[in-house]
Image (cartoon, rainbow, N blue to C red; front, side, top):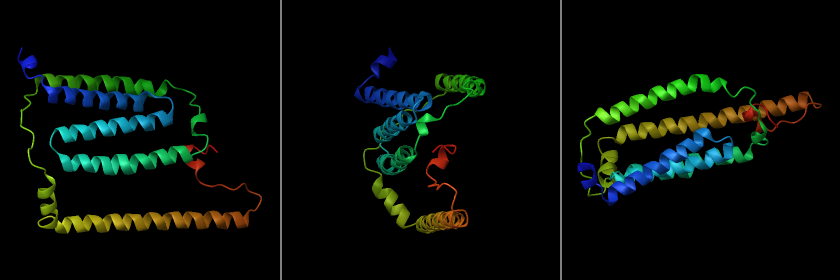
Length: 196
């Protein structure tokens, strides 16, 4: 009876968002079409962002939407759509992944169920004030140096990726000059196991 007494609008929204995230995650894992999996990932990330909003973590929720939904998911969709014949790949033995995956999934499901039933979850009130002001103040005061170091590391990674990509393009152009009879490769289909 206590569970029915605590059943309010926030609980209904929580279960709807959790069901969206779990159902979309199942669509990502179980779909045979990689494009459908990529679109199901949108539902998973949006459901998790909604859960963050519900918990009062507005900054994390907005970062989830901007970085994962707005950036990484769009990049994945572009990679899927630009890779030619990615849906024509045939896997010869589909049962190989099931032999190791099903026991591990059942073990993990049992562990999570045991934790959910026996863990004393503390009930906390959601944050009433936005958390962005505190996070912005902390990033510009006590965490200013780690924040700037992280930005320099990301800039170095971006420059390194550009150097590696430029070197690969130069080597491909050099090999095309050395061997003019070879068919041209654009590097796009190579990510799908060489399917072109």
